[in-house]
Structures are given as structure tokens and as C-alpha cells.
Image 1 (cartoon, helix red, strand yellow):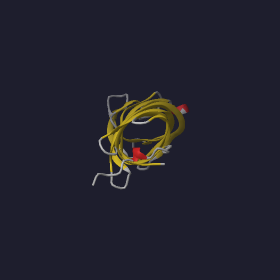
Image 2 (tube, helix red, strand yellow; image 1 turned 90 degrees about the vertical axis):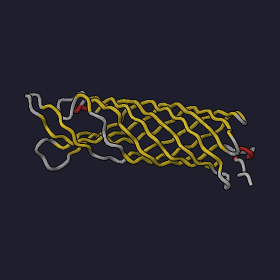
Image 3 (cartoon, rainbow, N blue to C red; image 1 turned 135 degrees about the vertical axis):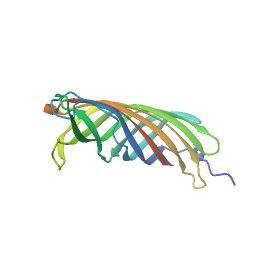
Image 4 (cartoon, helix red, strand yellow; image 1 turned 120 degrees about the vertical axis):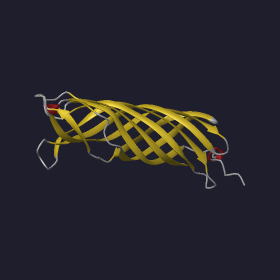
Length: 201
């Protein structure tokens, strides 16, 4: 028996989506005076939780609308070596944690029996913490916490289930900057891979 298509719901207002996966900070720079500074190497992957509400405004088989949501990444430290400015190297552990909230347009289309594809582009409000272990210090200290801004793009595909829900994968990018005050301006480039599930409402 074919799974019931969520698209058969003519009075559907949109989709409630949740996801779990990981984030990868591909590159982060810091224009401050305290190590770590300049360009970070690729930081450790971080477990990530994701949620979004996709409201359908127009369309039937092909549709467009407005979405809002957010993601939260749990920090993980990574050790690397950095020049100390005098010909030597410091052993540094650093982590970048971010929470982002986004809102913007999205488009989608029905595929197969109850499946869907979608894409969205949106500005994002980003909250970040930058953490490090100072050379010679066994403890960790929070370097700074601040709000910033960015731009997120995501695409995804989901397949229909017998329950009428959909499950699939989503790929998401997030580029932005956060001003950490005395610690400096940080620009970052990150991406996420998420396992997602959606239910119409």
C-alpha cells in the first residue's frame, strides 16, 4: 500500500520540521590580540539540533512560503598548535559554539508518493561563544559571548512515510560575523548536515 500523501491535505498550512545532525566550522577568523587569533583551523564537528516552521502561502504541487526556525550546536574543543610570535609554538584548545535564529522565504515541490524537496535562503541572528585554553593553563576560560548576524541557505529532500509524515536529509550553510568586543571581530564559515522529519499542520 502506498503511503498517504501529505499533499492531499488541501487545508494544510505548512510543515513543522525537526532535525539532528552535526555542524562543521570550516573556517573562523578573529581580529583580536589574544591567542587564538588570526585564522582558526577547521574546528571540531559539533552535535546540532534543528527546528523550523515552514508556512505555505501559495502553490499546490509547487509551492512557496515563509519559514522561521533555529539551530543549536554543542561545543567541542580541538587542540592545535599556533605560533607564539617569537619562533615558538603554543598548544591551544579552542571551540566555537553558536545558536542561530533565521526567517526568510522558501520554495518546495512534491516528488514521488508523499515526498518533497525544498530550499530556503534567510538572514540569521547568531549568538556565539568563543572559548580557549590559555597556554600553560589547565583550565578553560570563556573568551567572549556576543550576538552577530549571518546568512543561511539550506536544501533538503524528504520521503513520505505511511503515517503521512516525511523523513530525509538537509544540507545547510551559515556564514556570518560576530563582534566579540575586545577579543575582536570573528568571521565564520560553517555548514551542517541534518537528518530531518516533518509533519504537516
